[in-house]
Image (cartoon, rainbow, N blue to C red; front, side, top):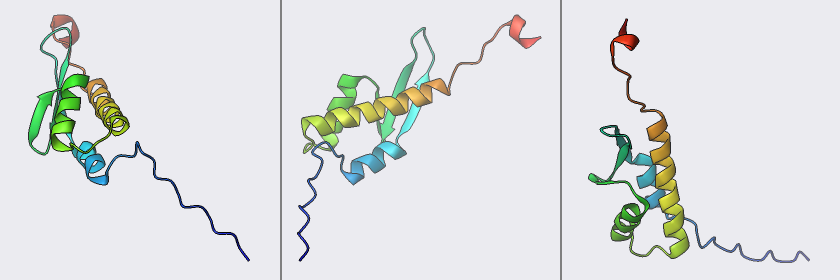
Length: 100
């Protein structure tokens, strides 16, 4: 007789599927208007300037049932998406030296 397998324990930090889909589909716009670029994150038509605190507040507003570990994971996920967008959007150098 085969022993029954114990039920799989759900990861408490696993993100809900709809949240993952929204973060994957999020738009990130990087603005290089000053020395420190800023990123605007847009999820479901609503956007904000990215910072960990603002991202945390925006995610909690949309998904109030997230626990602390899920929220931390989602903020890191958005921050990674912002870093990827910032690397790919370096401002073009201007000036006569670069244009000759």
